[in-house]
Length: 293
Ligand SMILES: *Cc1c(COP(=O)(O)O)cnc(C)c1O
Image (cartoon, rainbow, N blue to C red):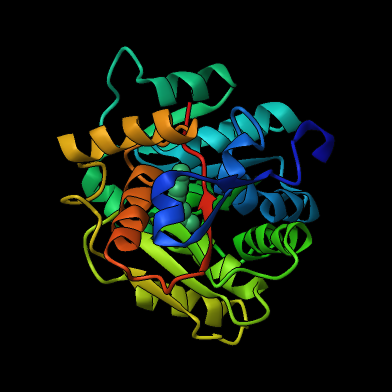
């Protein structure tokens, strides 16, 4: 099935006067180029879940998310590409016309089901309700983050070690649930440090990631940390400064970023480079987790 996908994802070296001056060696792994609709970390998190669906002989996949969820979008795309039915349980009321995410999902064949926010909040109850209603569906949690997401995300690091002579000093990526970071950490050998940049307000990542690693029986290598300085007010919040940075980055490096995850990440990295956070000569790989439509 992977001949539909562009793997390994390209690793691009970024060059500019600024980076030369600051003496950091900056690379970007373009996971956003894996597939136009199944991009970035959402494919990585799905890969082994798709196999698990087959193993469990479930007919389709049912998953959960907000109305703008990249994961819901990617699951719908996977269903269409690999030919299995999908159901998206969407938080909140149905609004018409459908937004671009849900419109894509619907056209890709996903059945949409809306759940009010109060009901949605009780994840365990919601899950058992839907599993009872759709016993022949494989249930995937919000964001696609579960233990099967981990080996898929570890593949990113496997590819990296083939693409570089040695693993970088730093691997940087954006975090929502932290599932992708857990997978990257699990696949990592050597001394790289993993820096997660939170796209959300709050300190829950640390615990969630530790819990996920424990659940997957992976010894925490403790080589990672979460930076919470660049969420710009919280999930999906944006500011003129962030928008200006994204435009300038695209002009200077020819790479698109979005403002929910990768824009905030790259803003944070450039700010930290400016402030001298990374020692001179550091090799940094940024994971472009996708999210561009
Ligand atoms: C979903 C998403 C993330 C967050 O991934 P987690 O595994 O939930 O931390 C990061 N970047 C992009 C572009 C995403 O769509």
